[in-house]
Length: 284
Length: 171
Image (tube, rainbow over all chains, first blue to last red; front, top):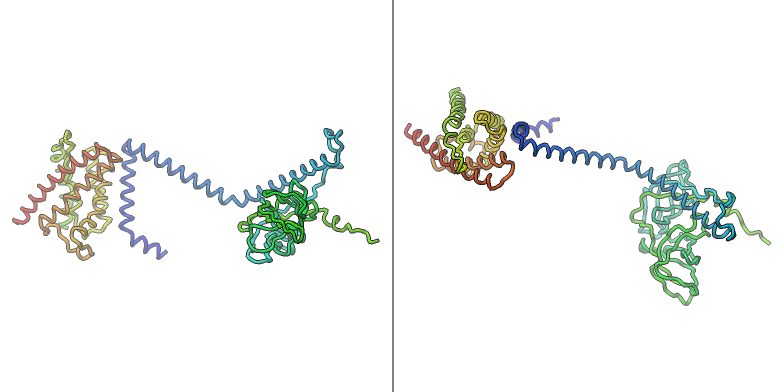
């Protein structure tokens, strides 16, 4: 209060000047038609600008809610995509050609195999060989160890530890992470692995030299993965080299996920994972 | 008290002189309309507080506009602007401007050349602000009015200053 008074006292001359000039301008605007027109237009502009700013501020402060709404809408859309994809697969592989135009039997339609939980990255490292991401969802939100982590752009990692309110995910940028991957459209199965270094590129391994690959081929999650749904994007093939001594290609993959800007993510749970992993071959 | 009475009397006299005498000297074809009332606010004592200077200038402007049926607010806006800048102009022409300087400054003791250097550009500045405010812009017509009225005002203010200066010297 004292500071305010000191400020007002120090600038009293300017304040008086502005006040009296304000009255003069008001007189001009009130009693002269020409000025009235200009001031009306000016005040309309000002009012418009203030309203626009107000709307922008409202939008800004509602961003959190909008993001949550969009994420839940995304989850629904993703569910629909997986459901439709599985319907297509069922159509392609399970139904005889003669029955293609018949309605697919309910028993053939997939159940909701995957569950999504929206979350936010609150901590992320990219400079180490063993990078991890902390997420703002925990056990109480339904997070479980072994869940996959995805972003809008692609695969991000896998949950390795869960507390009541937070989760820790092993990043795809972790040299201990191995991921079943497939070269989309060619059906070539391999293993995706990050070997350290830049956060933009990883490697697709275990692809024998007799397969035909091309740059710009899409690398996605494989149906062999029990964590991620098949067909989820990992990256794009950018470089293919023959590694003749071991008989496999050296394939560089440009990651689709920008690990420098992780923000809103999803945990993904395969509800049938336990069932799938409990199936072990019988020992003779 | 005498000072207050004197300045109050001059306040009325300047407005009357403007309304009754200098408005008749208007030469519309040459865009010349001399104004002498800005001299009143320019010669206000510097010991006055800023708010008083601004209020006097505002009141004179409103009265001039009302008396001469000019666009209301134009003269007061220009006179208040004039009062606001006059100290800076004096600081510029005198190369000094601390508080003591302004408290000691008496316009009736200054030389004629100093007075003219102080008043004439300020009178011209008044015309500039006034016509830009009234026309709400600056076009050819506005420029002609500024030049014409500026010249007329400078001429009549010079005459007034020279006459009053001689008389005060004789006294």
